[in-house]
Amino acid sequence: MARTARRPLIVAHRGGSPAEVDNSLAAFEHALAAGADLIECDLRRSAEGTIVLYHDASCDGRKLSSLSVPEIRAIIPTLLTLEELLDRLVDAGPAGRLVLDLKERGIERLLIPILEERPELVSNVLVSTVHTMSLRRLSQRFPEIRLALSRGQLISSLRRTGLQVVMATLLRPVFPVWLSLQVRWCGATAVAMQYRLIDPSAVQRYHRLGCRAYCWTIDDCTSARRAAYAGVDMIATNVPVELLRCLGRDEEGL
Image 1 (tube, one colour):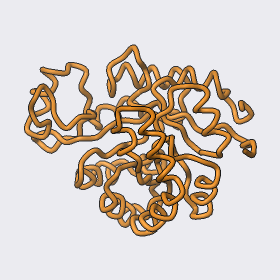
Image 2 (spheres, helix red, strand yellow):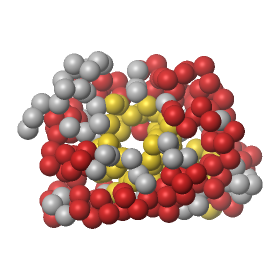
Image 3 (cartoon, helix red, strand yellow):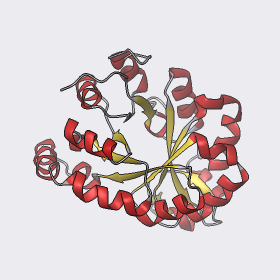
Image 4 (cartoon, rainbow, N blue to C red):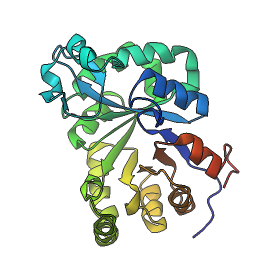
């Protein structure tokens, strides 16, 4: 594989700190201190229609969207709203760049007013989701915004590594063609793929489409180097410190 000239951007997945609670302020502060290029957080809605940072659809056996922010916070004291995180990141400047992963269909309707009130955020954010209509709606409202279409969740849902490898091997040849059609329709500027779907030819195809290649979620040096040499632009990880050590902190780090 051809050697890439630059190391991929390191995205701290949900804050990327095994020692801290996912999507918590402590995790995000850890990511910034570690030198991650971007921090990723999961967006869901509360009963009041507030965007909260949480991954799962349910909390303590109840649907998250049926709980108010105080009710969720009583169960998860570390809960942040998106607005709270943005307020904390005001002083971080470019170091506070965000990946916002939309976990629900239609939640972009709640995000649009926030982006309108904070126009400076549009240039420092990448919005990712599996929902093509959400991306299309955002691309039409904010033509300059960066958007990533996320695919490959089926592979991650398979419990056995061997099955994941087999499924990825079957999908890899057809995936770029299938995905390119969706990218054009929804206005995505990046593709966010499960890392087993990455190979150099796929990355080159996405680049020819004018899309960046973003892969998730890699926590070991061997896989990170393989993705980097394939030419990916961004790698999401739960261990940004380890990957920065492995790949290097500057553009000549590989």
